[in-house]
Amino acid sequence: MDSALIQKGVKRCSLPNFILGLSPVILLLLWGVYAMFLCWFKGLNQTNMNDYYGFALWIWADLAVIALGGGAFFTGFLKYITGQDEIKNIINYAVVIGFICYSSALLILAIDVGQPLRSWFIFWHANVHSMLTEVAFCLSLYFSVLAIEFLPLVLENRKINDIPFFHNLAHNMHKSMAVFAATGVFLSCFHQGSLGGVSGVLYGRPFGFREGLLIWPWTFFLYTWSAAAYGPCFTILLTKTLEKITKKKLVKDNVIELLAKISGWMIFTYIIAKTIDTIYWAKVTLPKLGFDWMFFYSNNDFYGLWILIFEILFGGFLPAFILMSAKRRKNKNLLLVAIILAVLGISVNRWVMVLQTMAAPVLSFDSWVLYIPSWQEVATTLLPVAYGIILIALAYRYLPVFPQEKELNSIKEEA
Amino acid sequence: MFPFCFEWVWDIGHYLFFGGMWYAIIIISAGLGYCLYNTIKES
Image 1 (cartoon, rainbow over the protein chains, first blue to last red):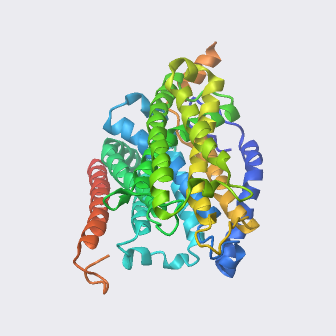
Image 2: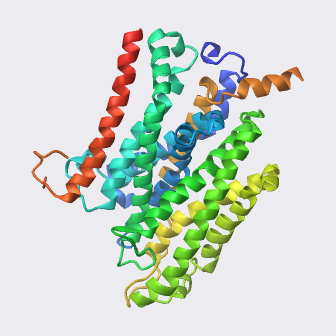
Image 3: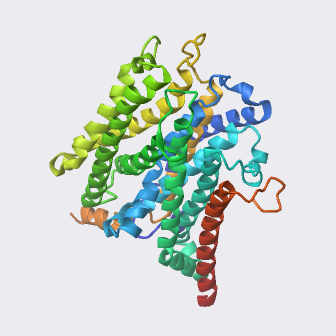
């Protein structure tokens, strides 16, 4: 039915099967859209946010998808700035993932701000003393960069590419892509950093507060570094997931291994810096503020030392240890364990920096305030997941996302 | 965002924030404009 839109030389399932397969995800999407409209029409009373939790599940989801989407800017950096040519075989998919992550982040923010029609106030009436203003600028501009990076892929659809104007436009955009990629790296470094800076400058919240360099707390640099380190793991994880679903090999092992190796070394250097930062915070920053570090990991039902150990040891050192060794990362099961742990590790990091920061008591009459999101918050947080699955499915079906797919699968068919 | 907005002040904060923003906008627009110009020329 839609075979004219599908690339030549690749196999795709029939359109009814495709729609049937996506139907549970479409239902999830509709549930999220319903909750989104509830939040917009009835207001933020639909959430369980309160005076303690001004930042809650949505902001964690925002920070997590932005970190996980970091694979787009970092693969762009590797391909166009450091000249790692092999990355060209996975960069399209990294861009699609980045586009989904950043559009999801903007969607979540559009729900969270409560008055999305006034989003332009961020630009027009900018507060130039706010880290979040910088985040808003860089996030929206980087999203436009990702849209520009995604556009040539859309234009390479079999039917669209038949039109000379679109064919030439895709070709010219590919030729200029290094400029867009470099701009994306510049923007990403700043908004990833400023997201970290938000918790780092909260001197009234000692769990998140950090000292730093000039106006930038150490979390500024740690967030940028961690997004570059962990983002490629998410790209690899989604590649492996798509390969499992489609029962096809889509990217050659040497490309995955190169990305895994770079990611492993980046995670290793990051987690050493994170460990030093944590020790300095525990032994120098907190005593100066009148706190003992164990105060933040005791006397509550959820936030124990386990979360710190999981983040640093299991979400940092362990995946780095696996990915840095050629022998270990060639083992498919170990590779999978490492990338899953890495994705969980960075998500836990963003969770503690948003929610544990809010939960910890800072005044003598305060106690730990734990938070359970409302179903509307859960539904709107799952909405981007459903949207992402649908967009990946559409991109995989109609666009040449994986340049090696034909070669890898025709070899299999001939054999 | 613009010097004619009533909150605008000529200070370091505005130079840095809006300097960075306009720098990125100009590069993105110029890059996109260059691609469109070449495409129209070739088509």
